[in-house]
Image (cartoon, rainbow, N blue to C red):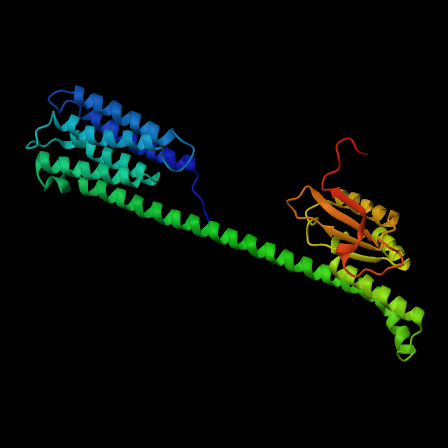
Length: 341
């Protein structure tokens, strides 16, 4: 798309407006008194300069649109007060094109209501001053046409801008979706490789023995099953150190559960490494019979909670976790405490 520099558009509008001023000056002797025309020129010049320079946004400020509208109403009244409608006034009716230009600028700067009110006021004043035929002879219809064209162009550009934003938003969403799919695929492939690395040796051993396993081998299979479950449910809670400590805890008979519910997905690599180091340390130091490691909600100041439960009576077997005693309760903060190494 080829864009037109804003400075070029401003220059063209300024030159076109200056042309009306030149016409007014060249016909200054036509009115009965030149002073109303001089006042009209000053107002028109001030309104034009302000309309072309005030505000960095496309939409004109409301106060400036109101000022332009007031100028477009006052301008014809000042000039025609010193003109004879029955005479050939020539360029002394410069105000018609001037109002049209000023209202076209207002329409281009998204002040459509003010622009239409301005040219309607011009048309009404012209009809009252010189009759309906003057709408054509003085060029009022042309001024209305300019505003109409500016209105249509402004609406078309606004629609194009909205469509461009919508397409850009859709493109970003598509890119994010594709990135998420690629990430899921990568994670899935990584988990598959990890699972294959863990399970393949034991599966080959089972196949070689025809499914007949010793008690020790069945125990190893259960350990492998738990490790594979960790890879699926533990996700971000896993590191080599955590895997090693979990394996050691299970070998001594503890039941370890890792539950990653997405609470630490937003942590950077450094913070996640710190959190996992504390998780591994807590699991390694605990002598609990059951250890549950769970991520907290993303809105929580806690990243991970580690809970260790023990049998109240080593000789008795308790199935209900509510009947177990708490041996460990650790809440690992999402952010490292200030001053910690």
